[in-house]
Image (tube, rainbow, N blue to C red; front, side, top):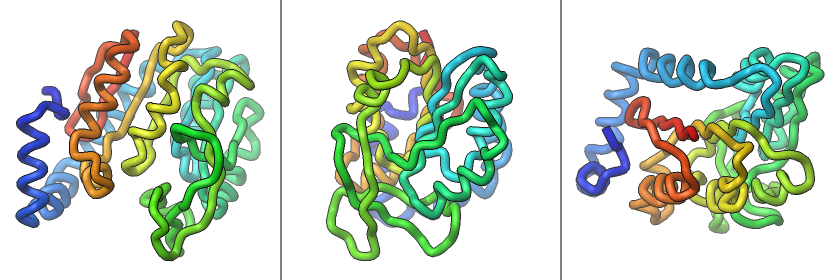
Length: 230
């Protein structure tokens, strides 16, 4: 099923306006969270091969970073991007013994510079996120684009993206990188509600279109995750 189709987007919009979307999402996740996330995780890891370069965008404390490092082996390499200063320290600690991991205290976006970042009091909170408005209780963090970073270093073979509703900017900043034939696989967690709250009701359609036009085939693993390959 294509979870970015217009019917489901309209349904989500109506559910959001009537106040039933969050309860439905909570119910769905409470019922299926373990099984559906495990399915995506298993399928994603099955695509990672020895010797590959993998970017973990929104690495948090390094749960997947460590898994990627094991899969790519000593001849492969993992770059873990985490903009939160507090979470970045935990990421460094958790990957300190991995010689094939490079941790970057950066976020990826559609431009280079600094942006506001919402950071909770809980260390490693997975809901920490980049904010483009001047909301209270935010800090400044550095960002760059995927294309700029790849030009200065090397093109990844695979990219995992989990950025709490900032998917549009991250993928927009990769538009030229997406055309590089060395990039074969992209794994994305789509945060529909967070994008809608930022005014991007059709955000999922936009990112699917951008990735698809770059020559990738899209497969939705479940209602929140897709894998793009070529």
